[in-house]
Image (cartoon, rainbow, N blue to C red):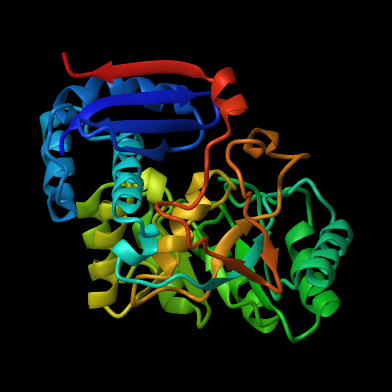
Length: 369
């Protein structure tokens, strides 16, 4: 079975990939969200020429195929290459699931079932009172018992979204939600190590269990200082795509929990390598999945399969008012009930792509001559 064609359907925000084998079998994947039209162009220009005609009958050879494609572009060892590769990788997994008539999780060695989810807020332009009200409604309506809120300002150089917001929102979440819920906080690369430790101590005092990306993610020394200084789990890695950098981060225990994003890092195969490195080092893996494109589906399958999975699936609560581009991409839109997300038993990723969405996207095809 060889790759006969690679098609993309892209917008600025999200890009879907369909591969067709010479057998006629097809699979759907996704390049990374955000500037996805650029990732689609990279896929056709720099990935497809080296993927078309390649043998994909055996999933055990997928890693070698991805490596060989990546190495042909050794002068361009950047994020966009991995964002494009992820589209190819995830489509191949879906194709194999459909051929085998199994969900991808079973190909990965896991089982269909439920995944505990946390309600992930992307908002900083929201008062602590309004954020608490949203969380309480989600707790009551959908059974969430874990919530992530934002502290600081995104890449904020120690600035807050507005003065005093961080010091207000941390105790407000704990007092308002009570002791029976799990709380997580995300700083999105805001702080110096010194300020992150101050904020971290406030998080510890309020029994917050997860402190994500406290320092600029590229400043490993600063992040490591925070990890070593605090009893709270310091987490990170969503932006990182270089596997050698991942090896360094894990070997040096830069964070307590690794968070590769399946679409940023280059697909399922490469994300599994990060998870295995973390497992060997005694670290847990909770992949980043901050929107409801296919990345949430991919991540749920992986979490049900890896041995060192973290406690929950990140589940974005921003849809119509924040990420309206998420709507209408595929059928059976993910829902959380009783605080859990249930994987589908259908083959592959278990979803069907909506023709109406495809019709509005920019279309490109690369195929064997």
